[in-house]
Length: 411
Ligand code: GLV
Ligand code: MN
Ligand code: MN
Image 1 (cartoon, helix red, strand yellow):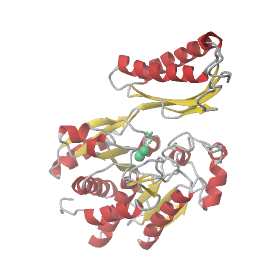
Image 2 (cartoon, rainbow, N blue to C red; image 1 turned 90 degrees about the vertical axis):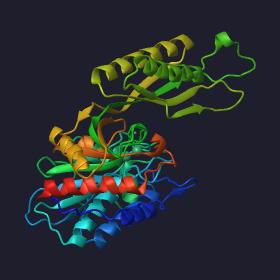
Image 3 (cartoon, protein in one colour; image 1 turned 180 degrees about the vertical axis):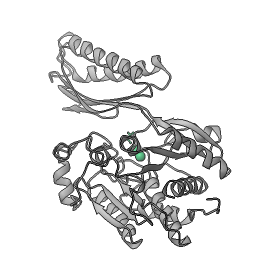
Image 4 (cartoon, helix red, strand yellow; image 1 turned 30 degrees about the horizontal axis):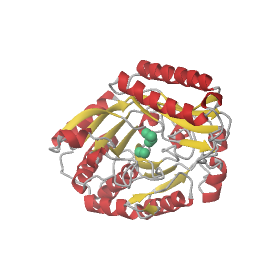
């Protein structure tokens, strides 16, 4: 496979820009929260491209979309993909690169008149981000059979709407069954932006992703008593806002003390009644903890959860905790990681191995087939931000690695 075939990076960048117009927001980013009207418009655009390319498109009951290009033999396909939903203040590349990069691989093969032995598939999975509905990676979890469809459909989002109702509303509750994918996918390869600073800072073009760190998402509900800000003595307060603030700073402290790969984020915090002169009687907040090491992640959870209980008690505030998502660290297929590294070198790119800090559909697909990821640099390490950017030359490099690996796997 040394024929030097390369993807058309300009065509790929044009598609990224066009999809980036759907749900575009100020600053060059996009807001396509899962199953919103904007997500529907993005889906329609990508499905249109899949159909134009002659792919056999299926939509399953959770809205996962798979486009298949026939192979010479009727075998399990080599799958590429990612997601096209975004956080509310997202960039154009997160997820979208993996899906459109997959389509670009197929378009390149079309142009060259190459038909692989195995079929090739490009998938985009519903609600990878998990910003609106938890858990994240919801579509791929159901796709591999680890999340029951009924449970996913009944999930209520941050705005109260359910996955099932929203899927039906946007017309993406498809007829294909979900689950039971063991043996149905030969291998899964996901091209993605790093979303962190390592590749750029160290001068690498390609990341061979060794695995994904464990993720723990909790929601805390704190129940205090609202009262007058001017008349209530400090010793008589049951201030849910104070407890929330203490949990927030403690989570940061735990991550700092533990060091290594431990990170902690309080990304959502809603305070009621949220008025200048009223003590807060209720807070709903989330804590996102991640570590590449499961034992250390459990240690961080133990410390944060124990502190939260103690802080609530001291203030006479009620506390309840609910797990929104929990994923153990995943190691990608060693042989595939080695191939990403070797192919990148063959193509003349600087490559290093690294773990992924973000969650990805690839970590879920890894339970049913060999899976791996190819990372390309994120400018200034910025992601989940409208300023997310990856240069056309890095996109070309990542797409070329994807093309070569997929051709190898598909024969
Ligand atoms: C999801 O993509 C996450 O890592 O937050
Ligand atoms: Mn992503
Ligand atoms: Mn993301």
